Image (cartoon, rainbow over all chains, first blue to last red):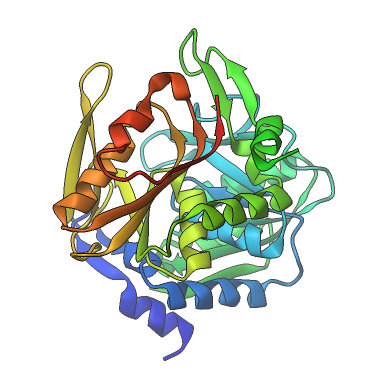
Length: 175
Length: 175
């Protein structure tokens, strides 16, 4: 099995979660499999075009492999949190949801002009959150080096929304 | 500087967050310091009495060093999430808050009888969440090998509540 097939064999599909009709991809069994976690980290790192200057991980499942990637690459890890959770001065980007909008924030001063930033989350769905993270990078006159996701839900076409920011969209498995 | 002093020098104290009178310890700058992160991981691992069979990390800041510890130790990482966030069958433990109660959950089948489990969170305050995680371990007839925290707020006496479960309570810095 290649890495994509291994990941799919471990992901648990849960019907009708969180709402009826949604077939939720439960990635939590991945974290209970240390050798697969190691292959995932190696898979992400080998797919990067260059070493980033920092990694942004999106709350909360994006904290997991996001911080691990930053740690392995020996670069800073920047937490992108839901609005109101970071206690100090923040920079915010909004994104639209099916009904209404939401926002993510990072600490002021975490990104520096000209840096190459890796954005990580577990799942690429509509691309709303990831493109908000990319906006945060652009607001600092920095570049999005790449996006990394464990899973891409291709029918939601999130990839189209991200190509404005970077052509390096790395997804280890697709549905 | 020793590790405790280094951590304190990087933590940002934010007055009156999230409510007036609370002097919040903002740990997010730690994650932007890769060499300190490496010392923290080494500090935790060297303080463990033995290698655990698995690590539980408590949502969401406990996911960060929790998963990193599991990864370095090559053992499964178990996510303890707020009630309702895990999509599949779960085991739940409640804990009391100042007003009311809350609960954390882990996936059913994640802990096995007789295992030695490490419980990780960023902060030891009243010990409510950590003791709920320890209850989850005990419900599976497993043992709490140790608790690891970045910070202990000693005036809240959380340590007293945890000593029912394990004498290995590892806190890298105290206030």
